[in-house]
Image 1 (tube, rainbow, N blue to C red):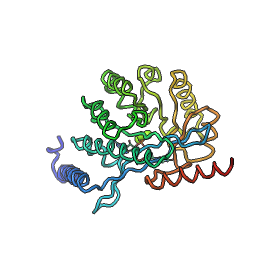
Image 2: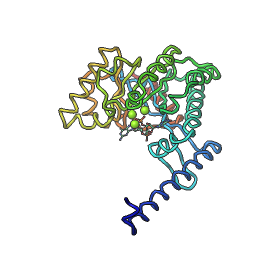
Image 3: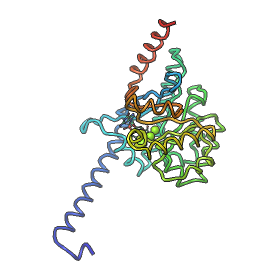
Image 4: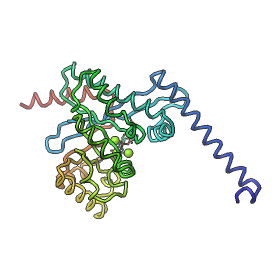
Length: 285
Ligand code: C2E
Ligand code: MG
Ligand code: MG
Ligand code: MG
């Protein structure tokens, strides 16, 4: 065993684990404080309808500016929060904040924008998820259609029966559903027909590589065709160049999201973007 081999190897190994655990605990305690002190912010990234060029939805993406460590990526702190019930607290905060924002935009007479929210597996498996979403919508007097929930492909695969039932209840409530990061979860395309979802988001690795590798383009093409035959829309994630957009257009992909159009924006910045666009359209008429 490692222990018997003795010496520094073992010591180094346990120290590394100890350090990792201490860092995790520190982050977990910081998340609790962050919720109390309002350190989280939501940014909104436009999702563009390819044929009209209009922004018809945004994806809410959480940001955390830690008072000591500075900005921490959700790719770092969400998985740490997922190891505890903190993810439920973050998830509740995100849902409430998204509904509050949607209501504010409605009051300001902004054009109707659907907001996509990332839901983590632990949150999704909660028995009272449907009820709590329904409650938040009622609190803000919002139409369920204003929300879209994104769950990742790998998550949908691992808890198939439960996931399907949960998706069905959400759908009955009138909420739109999307499968996120599609293509990374090693499920077969035939899997899709079992899921009552409105939309598939193709993972950005395929969008990046399809320009150079025909293999990736074939995958993108196949996903679009299967999704369309199942009456689902397709979003391309991580679109960064006009060349990528051109390919997506000729493959009849429905929607696109990525730095080519816009990075994730503060609510105020998004409002400005949408208002400027409305003015441009007004002038051209
Ligand atoms: P995701 O849901 O797949 O979100 C898309 C990620 O791609 C975002 O990273 C976004 O900023 C980034 N992105 C968008 N366009 C481009 C592009 O053109 N190029 C590149 N390279 N990247 C692009 P972000 O915001 O760092 O979020 C990472 C992940 O963290 C998300 O992946 C999602 O899984 C998770 N996440 C973010 N916000 C939340 C949240 O509120 N709740 C939960 N449960 N998870 C969240
Ligand atoms: Mg997402
Ligand atoms: Mg994604
Ligand atoms: Mg992702």
